[in-house]
Length: 512
Image 1 (spheres, one colour):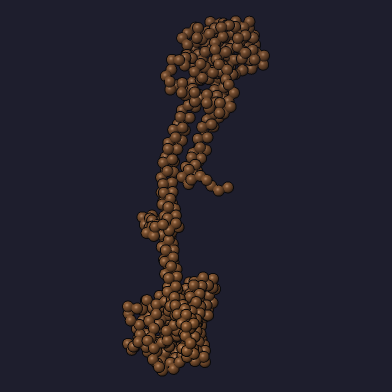
Image 2: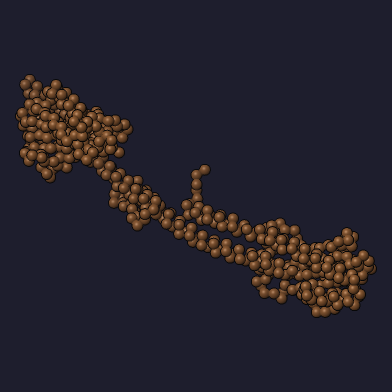
């Protein structure tokens, strides 16, 4: 199922869930309260049993004094019952009470809020309800089920109930001697409630503070991540719609993280896309322009042919039409090749190509076909790594041969009759250099980059119109750059007139 929640909400959720797990520890404070109660049970058991042993061997007058003293020291209310269940002595009646149960109505509202929180936590934890503590109006032992249980089982019996302010009242009953007497001790353990509330309050403050900091940091993180992404999305949409050619994709130069890298990558990608679109549009316009001339000439020749009766003139018009058709066929072939070359090279697996062997085979093949005219071609191999001249580069041999064919065709077309053409092979800085040098008029400095543009051509005046498409050098540079190389036009090294077209390719062992 696809995500339909924004990245900001997800960042907040991830951080808050972690804190929610921490907040869940509030519920474990209930076990802390149970441990405190269990400890007080043990203390109450020890106190009431020790007191019962001490009372068993004392006369009544001393017993009452001991009840008062122990009750005051231990903050207990001690009641002594005889064998008939009659109340013999009550430490709170014999002396001032050592504690008082608090009336909730007399406390501030903060205590009401604390009790409400206690009730809420008990409800969430499913804590069984605790019976309310009230002093019975009947003063006999039968009003206390703890005493009946202690006498029946002849051991200490402990329970606890809730005071009006929801603090625990621990009740402990134990037999005194063997005559059926019983001792009842009650204690208002307010400190248990205070400790539990303090622990909850401390943990709640920590969780609340951590939650606030987490939300702020999450919002800051979301802003630093989501806002730049939204800007990039808006810019990408505007680029896709193409409604504004001047859309600038933010590069976020101040950011050195992945978002900054993404922004600059998208910016570069959109720039390259615009250049590619512009190049395609320019190429389409150039194709239309280049095809329009021979088509116009062809149409004119055919229209004129219908009205001409002179056989010689008809033959001339037919010749013009054939030339135009040949030009159109040549242009279409070159344009198709130029259009496919990038895609084909991107799928080509490069293999080692011996450039010296390739050049020698190509020159021999051209001489056999006689396409060099009267221009002799000389191969010069210098500065090679080995005496045999192993100049191996990574590439597609057929494509590299196409580059050399185009450069040699260009050199032949510009060279004067019987003008020599030199191919120099050398190696420098782990690169293979192939230079094609002619003795023609050379290329002006201002035009040395323009000659590699599509359909740009500086043709010699003696050449028949339509012989070249103006794509040869553009195709050659595209192929060379796809082989991680460079193709450029320079002056002859000896200063003589002529052009020097230099190919530089990486050696096979250093190829990327």
